[in-house]
Image (cartoon, rainbow, N blue to C red):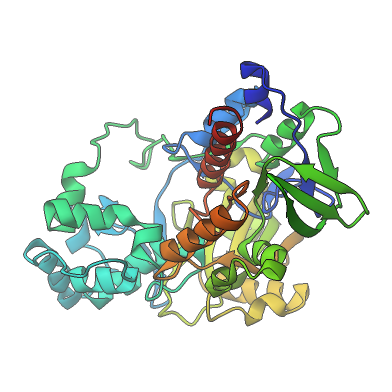
Length: 450
């Protein structure tokens, strides 16, 4: 918004109202003893360009680093099994590695091959990811590969997650090519990347910043005009006056705004408009609690006999952790020489109780789980545990309709108020940046070009 005002010479005054004492939301970086530790997200997809463009706007694109690639694994039946080469988000595009994989039984492999012959689905409208993929591939490939890969970022239940709102591209591939295997094979770009000594591509698909993701928040805050940001201030009430919106703040201040972009979670947005009887449908968007557990060790305290950058955990296992990143391998710039950094994840829909335990209990459970997979000698040098309580929005079947209805209500009653954020049109950082940009463009169009 500030950039648009400068470039187009628009008479805009921007105010950013933040209820907490810091900016950045879930982006939180801990810098300690030479380690760079992410409490929340650790990276963003390079193919989604908006975060990289944001970094360029801020002049910090020189700080971008790619992840080091290596073999990723799935923990199934107590063993780490490599994800078969040629799998695109769990869908096999090369048959030989898939047929040789220890992730599935022969029966499971034969059932998955049925995708090559099955007709298109006749389901109209939204459906769950589980329903869609089980029909095409059967239970085993979904439970042991597709579910861990696709549900992780949402901490969701694949049998309730909305296909339309999470991975609509698969619906389009089936519609166009019938078979997902054939369709993904035809549509996935052929790459001839450089290889490292283990045959893995050197070109990672993710970006972060050399000094952590919070670098982008700090750079943005530094470049906003003085007086733009109000921290530790909350909106108590929202109402209308003609074509303007009145914001009553908890510090007694009253702000008259020509436009408002609400980037809170959906429950906070619902509460803001509850007195007007609006956004009731947003209450139907469920949330779950998750926690991240970063563990720093001396290099000789952890023995890893598997190459790679980490693993996901199939729900069929009796483990509390849902995934673990070997951060020192995936992001070498985060970890001092002679040290190891592991980052485990706990909590997902239906398995949130662990997030409420004390730090010591969570650390003990995580170390016990990791000890079944890795050889760990002694205690970590330190740990960083972060909880996100009732915080991860669940994109369940019908999500798009709920969001559309909420926006339609606002358009009718508060036409100058826009919704943007992880609760609505994507949880990834580029998705959130895109929503912010779209809201800005909408506001500018309405204020200056209508």
